[in-house]
Image (cartoon, one colour):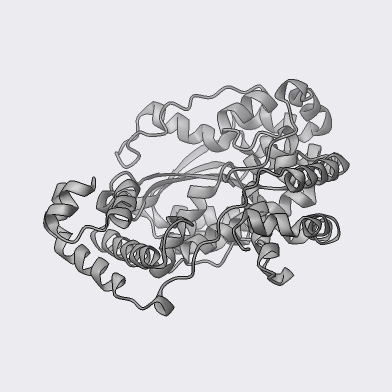
Length: 422
């Protein structure tokens, strides 16, 4: 989960020594660390070997996973390697050589699938597997945010801070499709899962000792579902990620048509969206509204080769969108809450701090800026509680409904004014 968050209450300098706590709470993790270097590493290049991996997954209970892929110049990622540590062995799956459909299904059935910063990995999983949202995810990066207040702690730092293990992360951007991999690449890939089971165990012990494990588990499944939903977004909804509340209805119509056209072309030509039109050029097209190729070339930063190939087609898309009647244009984007009157903001932040302290979680884990903005929108526009963001359901819901919403309602006029609703 990488969106902007409310201010953290955690100061890294005040965080207790996680290394000392880790081994004390989880002797099993210490045993795993002792055995980690001895875990056999097996390359899987043939179907019969993959069948053995699937058999191992059926009985291992927990598995640690990572992937390596290339997506610098394509729309669809090219999966190069899947690494997994079942405890019995570390497997390196030579993905381009293997049919992985049964493997994906096997991963979805293990009790706990451990990842660190699983966003891109699960995006690829959903794209290639056709599986429904996973419900067995444990993301150690999400878990560490509960313990440290650091929202995007990298794997290298996590191992160093918690297990006092130091690994090399210099090969993340190398060519993972080459064969054979260099010794350095192979070691990098192995290290990504070698210590992950031990990292999980120490985090699990700390979370359970503080009564936070169930909260983390729920947030991990929420994130897995969010990543699945991202993969399901229709082309004509892609514009929402680029929309600006200052755009007129006509501009939003143009943006919707342009974003859908860009998505379809990127997919058809298997190149990144930004290779078709960068975000800056999209904004320029919407604000400048070029009407011919000359204006498209001089008023925007759209690449000249793309203008030559697709300029006329793009202009036609834009002109068609501009002709839409107002009742066929997308609804306006609500402005984010802004006000010089800090009464609402202060009251909300006080409530967040109080509840975070009560639960023993960082402020920014309890309430994300994105969720708060969506909550404001629901209240300002008198939407039903069912429209709350999913992140505020589950273990946060009672507090939101019983405490936070009444506080916001006390300042509802200020909220509506600050969002331009009245």
